[in-house]
Image (cartoon, helix red, strand yellow):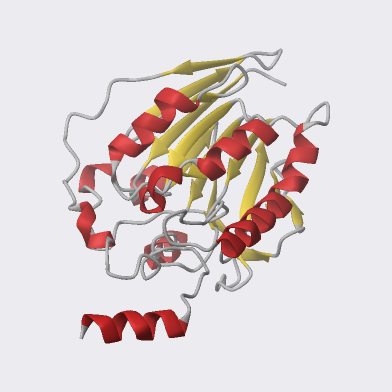
Length: 301
């Protein structure tokens, strides 16, 4: 590997960018349900024009991962869109199914892996650095609400989806350098079950928690207690926050933490994500038993 510097930038929710030389990778950019991403933290046309190559990744069509504004960027810069198979791309993009691999003339390689919800997860090799963005790949279950059968089914699906990445990580050159992975507070006490399993099985060198619904304390707590000898964890919680990674010729990685932005992100009431049915606003593909719901409604009346 040649000496490289990668700059990671957090926007909000699951949105990040990775800048390496004249190449910019943007993952699941989103300005928020109420357009709350601060102006100072947004990607601008001027920033895009500062790169020769811009790759925009969209893991799936859920609104919190797919902001249509990204399609306007093609007017400002040479953007290539790499998206899940259910999304539009026009003439300047590629759709991917799990198992697909794309290679580009500049040496960038993209492999799509499965998800336990909609779409795909992405593994990108750029300048010899491997970056994994999980999208909605996670161990989606709620111990307080899911049945034992639902939990077992969810665990099997998750382990099956992660297995190819685990096998890759065991290869001599298969190390994942940076992984962005969900830690969703709506899962209660088991919010980090999927992320912990991914750390144990795939051993990324650096993990960045995401999908924490502006509950910064969730990401911070996971970073505090989840790191291992093989995996460092850094919580990026402020829109516009950067982390700089330096890789030397032997592949040794140094993590630099610049000062936080001077502005404060808007505070969002986490109760907006709560409801009488814990599955209404979640990514878990679980349906409550209709008979149980009917009985509950009858009792309430």
